[in-house]
Each structure stands twice: as structure tokens, then as C-alpha cells.
Image (cartoon, rainbow, N blue to C red; front, side):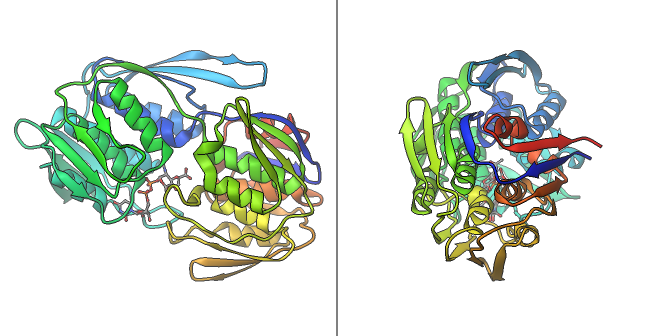
Length: 430
Ligand code: EPZ
């Protein structure tokens, strides 16, 4: 199994190209199930999760053609992928596939809308929490679907003539359930109005792509989304939006190590709340042409309290990284997680590097230390593992991160991007 070896202590200087967003690419790829035409996606990141979903979609009958990567001057790649689902080959998403990647559960929306039925395995729990699917069941039921749980699977059936538009308000904000409702309601008869919808930029990206395919969606990015159903969708060409979590991760890395880095191909407005927290911690962050410039001052990190919330609040997917940054602040900070109940697995591993963190319920109290020391640590989930990389970059000596496959799910060419900016990071393949 691969490991990542980091020798900490170097400031980061240079350019880091930001990839297309994993969490936008996944629902966009799934939207290809809604049409028999070709959906072309540009800026698709090369990640384990994307490759996994390509295999899953292949199972449902999606034909996939990948256009070679093109390298740009700043070291960035651009990958264009064509998805064509002439006919749906299989409306079942089996446990073996759905249990590996929760987002593959979302195929339930387009399969139900296009084929009138779907049999999709329940995804089960995962490392960061129980993650139920009640909101998907309620939402699709509101559109007239019969939803039955049987043997670990959801059997979903649309009424004769297809799903029917309806008003439905989520009792809790869910990104995935909002994605699924957008896809399902696009092909329903009549108008759907979703209340308490997720406002994440990835939801807006999906709505824009669906509209380019002929859907009639308005209000994406607000809590109320209106979808006027259409009888069919066509192909389209769409560019995946930049990864705001990758952007925030590298910005926090620079704030921690010190240095001067331009994050290219990204957009500061995608992560206002996180940028504000990074600035309060002492780094200078500004919008520049085609990206964001971050100047970090290493040793002078100020303590900042954060609470994770649905967009536009502080993203849960940046919580672990921000905690990494706070381990070296000049004082005490608090990090409160409100989205997932078990998203503190990085705490024990950060402690191995010398961090002083105590947990009380959903809040971590972090007492900043003047230095961290390298140690062997273990990646536990995607975002937790990158917080260990960030901490390792600022620690004295060698940090060895094992179980790197977690990182490969969501960070494209991480070691190459950091190395180009002066970090000592290498992948060790045993
Ligand atoms: C998306 O997951 C992201 N995944 C997650 O990123 C991200 O952490 C999360 O949104 C929150 O921003 C992708 O986009 C692929 P939710 P999702 O439904 O859609 C509860 C990463 O590291 N809930 O918004 O699965 C749920 O348990 C990943 O890239 C229900 O109670 O998250 C959680 O507490 C991790 N019932 C809360 O809602 C439901 O039916 C928000 O989850 C559905 C969700």
C-alpha cells in the first residue's frame, strides 16, 4: 500500500493549479443517465472516486470516452470525458459498488426518472458517520414514487406515466438529496418546488448543466429551487467548476508553512467563509487574475473559532484541515462539527505530531503549540488525511502518512503540486 513521506519545514512558493471539483464531477457524471445523447464534461479531475464512478456508470450502460489530458503551462491538466447512455442496461446498483462510494446511490434519481424504476443498494454507514437516506426516500415519495426497502435495497417505482412534480421541503439540508431531486424532477410531469434545498456551488453547477441539457431549473444557489419538468433532456457540454475544498486546503497549507502561492484556475467567491477564517488566522488572501494569491506567515498564526455549517457556512470538508492549521496557533481555538457526528478521527493522529486537542461532544479545543514533530500517522478518511499532510509540512522532521488511498479519492497529484512549490513530499510504493 502506498505511503506519503513528508519532510516538514519548507515554506511553499509558486503556483498550484486547482483541479475540477470531485463533488461537482460526481453528480454531473450521474446526470448523463438522464439522456440518450452525449454529455461532455470538461475539467474532470483524475481521482479514484471519479474512476470508480466511471466503472459504475458503465454497468448501467453508459459509454465513456476520455480525451487525453492536455498539460498547460502552469502544470495543470484538462481532461474532457464524453458520457453516452443510449439505453439503460441495468436499473440495479448493487451493494458491492454502492458500498464503495456513497455518491453512487444518487443514480436512483435519474434511473427512476428515465426508466420508471430503480433498485439501489442502501449505502450503509461510513467512517465519518451513519449517513442515512431518509431524505431521499421522502423527497422521491413526494414525487409520487413508491419506495420500499427490501433486503438492504431500495426498490423505487414511479407511477404510470412517470414522476409527478410536487412541493417538498427538506427537514434538513442535504447536498446529495438536493442533487437527486433536481435530476428526478427535471423529467417529472409538472412543476416541483424544493424548500430548504442545499445551496452549495456544486448544486448550482449541476443545475446549470441540467439547464444546458434542456431542463428548466431556477433558484439554484438559494434555499428554494423550482423545476418545471420536461419530457426529455438532450446532450450538452459543461465545464466542471473548480474544487473549492482543494482550494481551501492548499490555502491553509500556505497559511501554516508560510510562503507565497498562487492557486490558479479557481475562484475566491466559492469559499468566502473559509477565506475569511484563513485571513483571521493571519494569512493574506486576495483574488488575482485567474485565481487566488495566498501569503502565509508561518509562525504568526492567530487562533480562530469555527463552526461547520451547510453552505455558505464553513464547510465540513475543510474542518480537519483548519484544525491542522490551528494546532500551531498562538492561543486556544475551538472547532465545532455540526454536519457529521464522527468527523474527528484526525484528532488522535494530529496528537501524534504533538498537537494538543481535547474533545468535548462535537467541539474540539485546540491549544496551539510552538512546534509539531514528524511521526508515522494513518489516514482515516479523505479530508482527515490531508490535514495530516498539512500538519506534516509544518512539522520538524519526517512524517509518514499511511493508507494514502483515502487521499487519492479526492486530491489529484497532491505530491506533485506540493513538490513544485518547494515542499519535500514523496510517494513510496511498497
Ligand atoms: C456531500 O455529501 C459531499 N459528498 C460530502 O463530501 C460533504 O461532506 C457533504 O455533502 C456535506 O457538505 C459529495 O458531494 C460526493 P449530505 P452528502 O447529504 O451529500 C444527513 C468529501 O469528503 N442526511 O449533505 O452525502 C447526513 O447524515 C465528502 O468529499 C440525513 O440525515 O452529505 C449529514 O449529517 C464527505 N438523511 C447531513 O445530512 C439523508 O437522507 C448532510 O449530509 C441524507 C443526509
